[in-house]
Image (cartoon, rainbow, N blue to C red; front, top):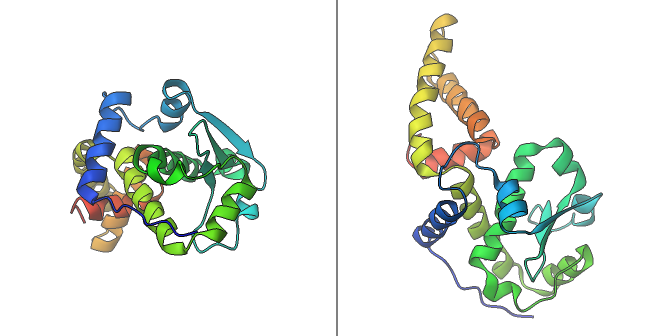
Length: 205
């Protein structure tokens, strides 16, 4: 099956992410309550599935969950949901991105089960899948780490890092960067690699 993706610019994705937050979480209080937004506001079922991650191994892209084609549910790996909160939150934000960005893609399929998703990924050339996956990653990062609160929290993280380094008489700029990333990752409840990407995205590091 050949599907031509409709590329979305980063600025367009950013606009859609900002609208999503203004609609569903205008207070921007942290961390962004993505699970509550999906479950309570959008009324989308979150379904934990034991072994989902293992069942979807073998693809180039790592998959921890998938959204149904009618956007009625998001299935996530049970282990990830229970033990890796940052990965779970990013997976939810990533999957809801497909609802916000890629309806043209998903309306062509009937994705309800793991096997449905495996068949689609196998049948479609990897280029269209990579396009929508990378776009969904951008959306997830913009929703979980919005630019405005990131600017505010970045200044606080610098102060905390300076205090730690002064207390321990450390001068390493690399360590300071890692401390800042760690403090911010905790505040936004995302992984340090995700936070690093977001900081690079906004030009802070």
